[in-house]
Image 1: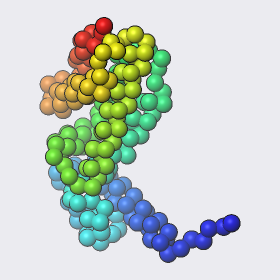
Image 2 (image 1 turned 180 degrees about the vertical axis):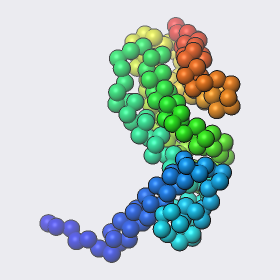
Image 3 (image 1 turned 120 degrees about the vertical axis):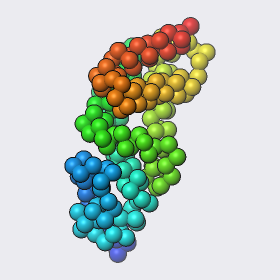
Length: 205
């Protein structure tokens, strides 16, 4: 049986296409003009939509930043999880976190703006990004649980609590780089590597 394409399907397709034009326009301007210098009017003009249409897909300029970052973060996480090495927990974590660091390193100014707006963001795209972060924490917790099964980590510790600690270390060294106190590579190794190694020693039986 062939499903008929109705008016609702056409509207959804147009909405998705418009959202993608806005996302692409915002990313292009954020990475060339800069986040602070970019206006929502400029994004609308680049996307070829009315200014009000932008606010159908994002609550404000900060939420447009979450719109462009969400899919990039998701792609990196999926790629890193799909290419996870058979290795101790430390190397698995650095494989994942290193992919994120290098993604941020492609456009440091955009990364700085994203991290600056992250606390307390409440727009619809910010909420999607928050849910992505929670999902990411669960995936880190699964890596910890796998390490528990291998005997690397004590079975007495809670994998989610461990994941939260590890994410805190990742975010701290990300901020160390963004604030100019270390290069991206140094933030990853030795700073993050040594911090995680120390934390893992605390997880052991």
